[in-house]
Image 1 (cartoon, rainbow, N blue to C red):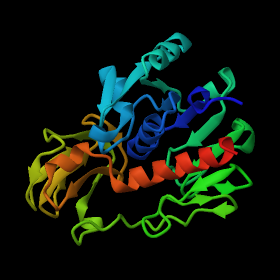
Image 2: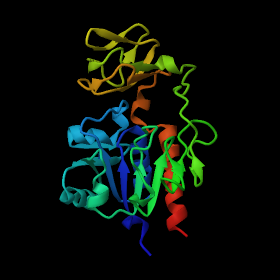
Image 3: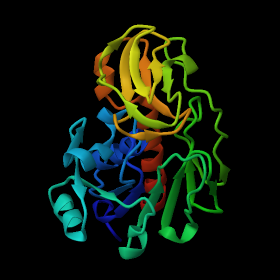
Image 4: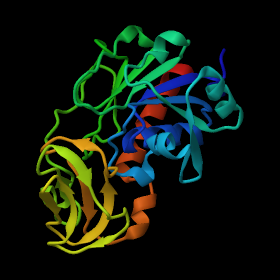
Length: 268
């Protein structure tokens, strides 16, 4: 029987939630993980996203390091050093190039981007857009509440509510959105303290203004092409800058669900 540390796992996405999954897998002893991202990642909570390795060669989140990879040799080298390789491959063509034991679609696109049951012996989808037994073997609930992180073996996750989770009594107010389509510009940094009414950035001549006070917990990479209404940042009204560097309870719970789903199959 194959050892857990030998299982080859590929994850679509390397944003905050995908990083929480990869981090928990790595901490649980899984060492052969590959993450696939788009050329220009759209992560907002970049201090907690392994996709930043594509911009900075490497990225460390709570003691686990990810590194940029471009060829098969890079992947092997990263695994040898117990690091997580991140590769530009938005279409997930690596699924066909290599043999994988597990495929995790963690893009959180709210729709299925083409994932099928035949992509790997075990296919796991995160959140809305997947149906266990139809296009994947297991779905992990991503909606906050009593079912967050639950493994679903038949059926789908809860529908997207479109409402951000409440923090400090705020929901939509804490999310910064692009007022127009264009390049996002900002001189702010994640961790900055923000007051209601402060200018956070611009898209063309349109301003992105904070509606509440707190700490800038997330900010899309300045220079990114955005569309009107896209999330470009978020403010934590609790004002704790340290939270910008700690994996969220949501990401951790989802990661725990993925670990459970894998162990339920390979520990039989």
